[in-house]
Image (tube, rainbow, N blue to C red; front, side, top):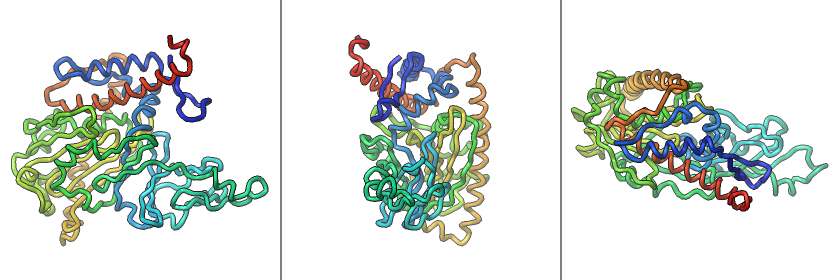
Amino acid sequence: MTQCPHSSNKKDRKVVSDRILEVVKTIEEGCRNMETGFNLPRECYVDPEFYEFEQEAVFMRSWLCLGRTDEIAKPGDFVRVDMGDEPLVMVRDQNMEIRVFSPICAHRGHILCEGSGNAGRLFRCPFHAWAYGLDGHLIAAPSMNDTIGLKELKTEAHLPSHKVEIWNGFVFANLDPNAKPLAPTLHKLEKALAPYHIGEMVSMPVAEIKGCEWNWKPQLENGIEPYHSAYLHGMLHDFAHVRLTSFVEFEEDDGAVYHPTGFYYPDAGFNPTGKALLPIIETLGEKERNEVIFASIPPNLGFGAVPEGLFYYLVLPAGPGKLNLRIGHLYPEASTKHPLFEHLYKIAQDGLVLFHNQDASSTESVQRGNRSRFRKPGRYSFQEESLLQFYQWLAKRYRDYANEVQAEAAAEHPVAAE
């Protein structure tokens, strides 16, 4: 068993056990290629120890999507999400800059806000009324002067701030201060999505689905794996049949997994009519009008780009077998001014609910099956190449973190390492 510091506090240490290292080795063996490969072992979905390892290896070191820029359009607007055990808030400050903080009071750790709304000019802790500006700095701490003056307290008390990157209107944060930029890893996807002008689209109100009883990975898997579409979704998905899917080559440094699936007719839509209900995006060419692009920017954003707009979901893990979802839709601003927009949008939204409910039933069943001690990794269909790519993305992060843990442990205990 090896150990490494999780932070600058050497009393706070994380471990990667030999058991977890064996699981990582199995994952690497399974994602080398389609012909000999196999999907993830059951521990990846149900094991509390692996979940804790994964939080450190993936979620504390990757770019996490928190929402859209137009959800926080005005100074003081904020949206709160929980990413595992880490509470986060994205907020628009007084200078219109988007910031991401850990909204935990520097006094006793009370969460400063919940849900979404407008904080005004500051966040005030409801416990002891400590207050923080929209830039995260402490501005008030009542009844503290007898022990430490506010001026001195300000030098040590503030909201932890995280790196932020905006990509096509999506707000990403990274809890690793040494993280490399996100955008260069998305150049292939960026090129494919350029005709959609996603960054200029308008966000519809986000739907929150809490307490889903499955691991976070199957939620992304279903969004990028076309194999199940002809069987689980049946006739609902026939216009975008799996046989019309093509896969995009994946490279080690890619930050997205995606694939286009063709339509049997142009301007199709995921609703009971099978046709787009709202105006087609004016800048799309013939190719884009005859396909959907299913994509994931792991570990927590998945979406589908269709001729009339885009639907997306944010995956928020809440334990080894539990997650919360934020689901949204994007449309060009011109479409939102259509005289029947509200009516047509509701139909489109209801259509996607049918797909979500089918996927939810399936992922919940997969989660129950993965709890069985007899569950073994299965082989890939040729229609699951995107799953292989997702697992390759995961395997690199698992291995990088495990290697870092071992290297730091060896540096601290060179004799033991030998």
